[in-house]
Length: 120
Length: 405
Image (cartoon, rainbow over all chains, first blue to last red; front, top):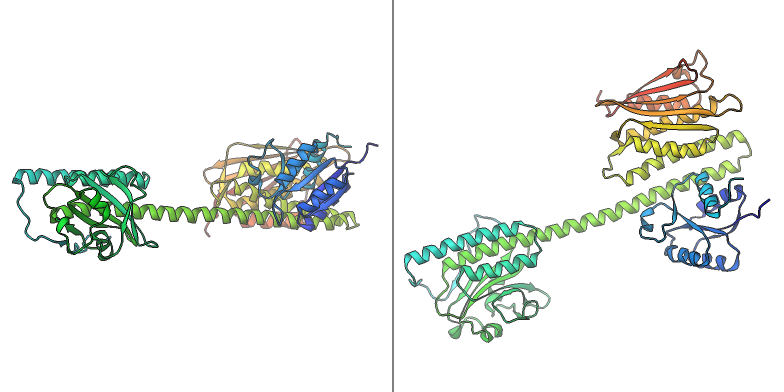
């Protein structure tokens, strides 16, 4: 069996975060952490080996755009899930974006695509 | 601006109008003034930036009164000053910088506060007003001031000045006030346009915010149901909850499409149903879904959402019940405009077909009851066919508009 992929989730809504976590776990991935704030996200990214990230764009305070750029620099692939895709206009290079609300399968398929892992 | 409003009585220091020129000269000067006013009127109707219009106006008014100098003064209430906004004939660097007092002791201030035109034909002997430094520095001997005002608060003053001897007359006031009225209307219109644009921008922000919240809320509801589905423990309950979540997805997709549509009341059905089939395909892995549309069909959003819910049920149903064990079901969804006021939506599968005695009206599954209710609400007709090639076809004929009955 291939090593389980480790995914960081940044989402300020606890219920959506729980659902994301469940979807990822049931797809055979490890959730390294659910971050609700940028500070938590940065902490989790520092302390954990991370293969990919799922990012809400707008948080209660601020957004995840700069955080996403940091991930790019570290070579960690990520996707955005947002209810306002316009927030990402002009983000380069063009990121993977899932419009909320999204079907669980879409999220898993997009993540596998990012990670380059085929459907098991 | 009332056109029948009495012209304010001018403050003129010299009463009788001297006959300076021949009747012919006067006539041709007045005709030229008329022409200038008419051109200015056309310029004011164009949507040019205000500064351009003011620049044009000061040159027009100087020419119209045969004077060397003209300026537009904007009233700055906070400073009680009148600032030169546009100028003709003045030293360079004064526009946007030079100002005169807006108090009653200055001719411009007097015209501003009383709304009455002011003529000073002998500034060197002027006793009613303090002659502004600006005029003295430019050797101005006579001046004429009229108020510049739209519907609202005064914008400022339009003033023509001359170094030459001679006199401004009441006819000159008529010309200058005419020009000022044209400018006043243009300024007012631009004020309104700015206010409208501000309101529009604000509403766009609000709409965006509401859309964001609606989609987030739909995600929240969907997540809650998915979480419950995952912990239900009973596969039947899990399925039921997943179906509920998928129905929310149908509504969410409509909302997503709608926020990208130029018209919030209408939605393009073919693209919407295509998106929906793409989403459905990911949920029904043991079905092959094929979508086709003949042309774009624009229909009211609430009808589109209902049709989409019908489609969701029919497709889910075909995938769930149509299957022979082991094989994939193929489902064809097609939408056609039938004529200008109705459309047909077909959902056909190659599954095992319905029982012979199937009656939609008596169907007891929740899904079919939802379909029957939506069909009735849409004023549509649902026919269930058994194609010769096997399988089942659900055919919906639906009017594009709600019918008044």
